[in-house]
Amino acid sequence: MNFIHEDDVIRCARMLQWSDERMRARTDPVILWAWKESYRDKMLMEFSVAWYSKDYFEARKDAFQDTSHASYYSKFGLSPKDIKTEHVLVKGKA
Image (cartoon, rainbow, N blue to C red; front, side, top):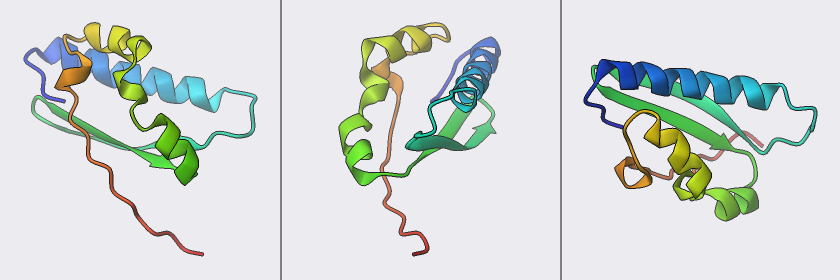
């Protein structure tokens, strides 16, 4: 995500942290994804998600485009169309 204003980058980072803390606080033992890495270079923010089920990934990979996510993006001046994604399949250890 590319930002214009420093305050928006900070708001985005805080939103990612809040989301991570909220997911970790869940009592449901089955969470099929997790935030992996966040990276910032000037006004660019990148982050990655690890999906632990291919079926769950296929069902939810475009969730970032739904209206609930769009309301979050609007807090830091973006919309779903501003989010660039890349899906990479990484084979883990058996």
